[in-house]
Length: 95
Image (tube, rainbow, N blue to C red; front, side, top):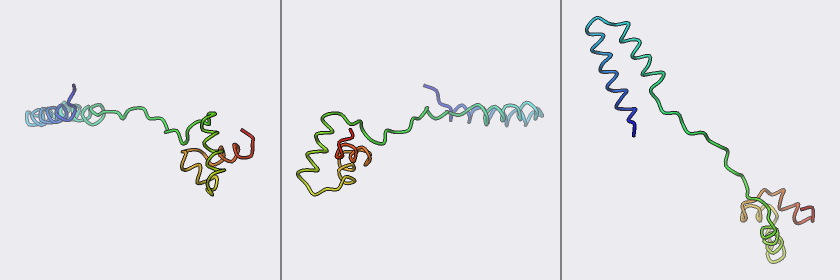
């Protein structure tokens, strides 16, 4: 596995030695490489799903909660990790 932190430290030490030998252009070039190329890119990220899909089983859970509790649609949405609009659609028969 790579160790970018250590590689940066070693290259910086090399740049210091080059500069001490009067090779300041080479040292500057090496420091530019360290700063611009020696880093880990963060992994590609996708936005997390905000709510789960409304399947037949989820639809039944919504209906059961609405009939057996005094929860509002927004509360049902939180409990089931759903978008409140989807809960409303199910309760109105649109979904």
